[in-house]
Length: 98
Picture 1 (spheres, rainbow, N blue to C red):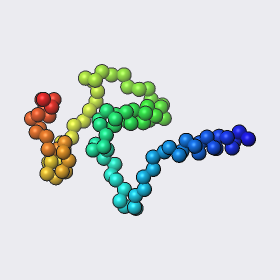
Picture 2: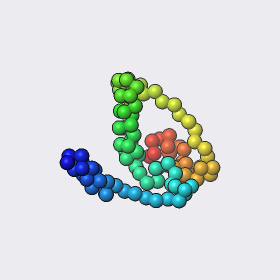
Picture 3: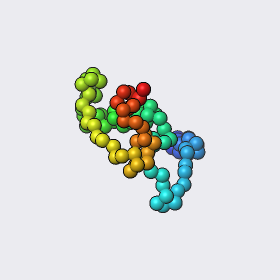
Picture 4: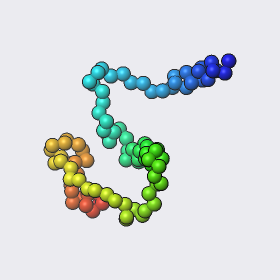
């Protein structure tokens, strides 16, 4: 039966899925910056962006990087967040990290 074959194939593929178990309330946070690179996070975001534009019925934006609409926010002081990226010297960041 074809349906049984499909079921077994899907079942076999699921055996390789990574599974982690956490106690309720002890789940890790959503911040992936400690476990992924910026490039990896962009790779994760791109399919979501494509899907969002498709669902909205909008074409992908076609503007240069210089014309990209952005909004800047000041981060909280490093002492308040404790995040390593917040401990960087702001003058260094203004010079592009050099």
